[in-house]
Image (cartoon, rainbow, N blue to C red; front, side, top):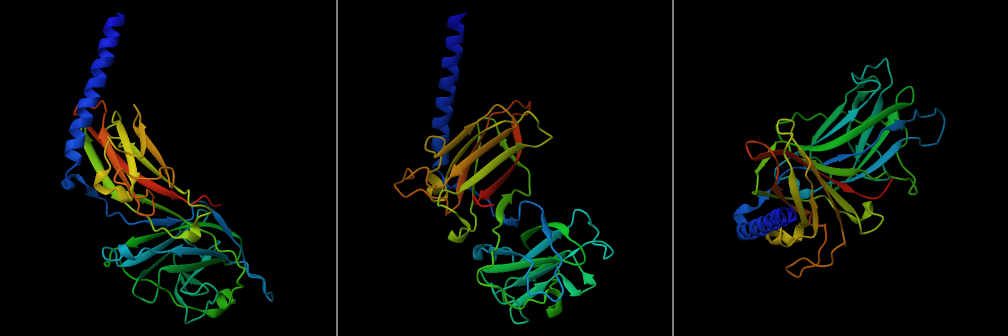
Length: 326
């Protein structure tokens, strides 16, 4: 019995070694690199409570956010869309609590010359989405502020890249809505998270691979330290619950050199979810001698290893950039 067990273990190890060699040969080809042109979505990551401004007071109670936009996405997606969500008022009834939002090119000045988009036309006419073309006066840095209308209101939001066919909706600036044309230089601006998610279901057959590459908008102001993380998750689609994967990860500057035989991060599971945490600076060099960092994004190699009768593993890929800030 022991002999049989040892034989099976040896056979399994040999199969994995042969498979790895085969993968190495196929991964040497640039044709095997699938570039994910998935745009980043920015989001707050939690619910915030907007305050109501006090009358006859200089106290600025608005929530402020700072966003760093990626220029390289504008060749594919010419517009940005901000979606504001109200859990207690999803229909945006003006009889209930809602919020006002302004977007500015200036961090400390909020005037007609700097505020390029709002979610209102007047104090009583508001909407949940703002859509604008990147060329309309905005730069890499976007500043956002939020305040409640008539009572404290919980909200969250996402900012996404969209195609040029999306209808623009920018509102108009009314100075009396916030009534604070300037902001103190010691005002705190909250950071936001970034994530990507595939908008199509991916497939990989057993003993075959798919390789993906993506990048985030990296700017030093969002990090407490250079050791930030990218957490990538593969989740089996409900149509193929027995799908399973081996997941390999490398810094983006590894490029075509990232393979199952030469990787930085690794996760193997016999379950329909694979998750890989890649920490910047955790590996000083890539295999081609370059300094390993995640500023250039990440490369993921996905090996199918599931139990579907079709031998095809079906999954959706997502990744989030962790900034290590609250």
